[in-house]
Image 1 (cartoon, one colour):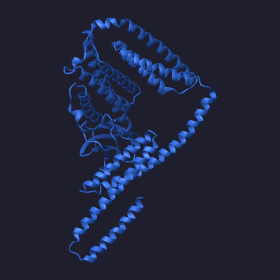
Image 2: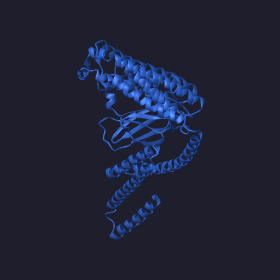
Image 3: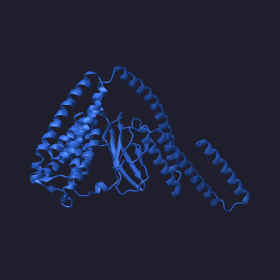
Image 4: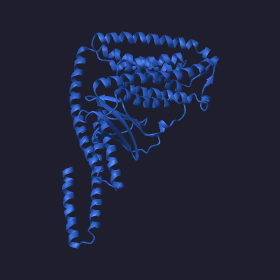
Length: 442
């Protein structure tokens, strides 16, 4: 029914490679301007979950949600979701179950306003999935390392010519290095989804650095070899601060591990800031390094204070956290269920709008509000989620009224030759159905 795993992987990875390498160009590319959609993997096992990711054009109209439709090998819809784009114009779906849709090639369609983008993926057995994942990880590693090497080579040219990099460019480069590190870590652990997520951000950051190196922005750089020499003593002081904080970090991490205190997120943040400050020191961005090290110092002090709190305080915090978490989870589930029901109503209405653009716009408004509510639920901002769902409910009711008015108008035009009594009876009948429908929806 479909080709071997090797040929499937080759075809998909070649396309993915071309898209990723396009991002490396230091000039505006078509990739950045197009509406694109893909998945975090090319081949899945039947028990895995799919994550759909993509980017909308930077000049796309605002106020819409992205509608994601996954179609199974039999041509029937496997699932439908709607999500909001992030500030950087990217979007990520919720995990999608595919265990009930069979083996074979799937289609992914994403809709935003009047735009559409499509992609495909394959559901196969575990051996083919493992082979595809390994090849995908190798591709991602090659792409991200080549991207960093390209930026490093250009930076070295500037350093050799005694140019000083602006702080915003150095900061963007530091973020790219950090995302590269996270990409390589995900590859080491065999996690294609996480690796793909970080490589997108790494390449985006490196592209912005390369854009800054273009001739149009080169005037921002200063050729100040004398200044570099004057900053040597300051660099020594900052390097000493870095070493002291690195040692403090190591001691606290060992203490937390010994006492089984979960500070993994805080330590990860501190480690990232330390790596960033080290890179800034190496690039002579002393002001930026000093600011990062100040953040590290504050964060490590907070960790130290938490580690040495009394045991009773820790137990009380744990008890309160457990109670609050249980209550919060219940509210999140309840609101998520409401969002699911409203989303299903919206999809049903979307199929009924026909050529009624006003009704269709109302449904898209509701979908956007539902996606906003889901985002608020994820952030545990339940008041905001309730407000968005209430507004979505109102928009859905308005859309329903517009659809029914349109259908009633069509029926009236079709029966224009009938007698007045027939017309009145038909109107009353429809009115009764409308009332019942509204009550049912509520």
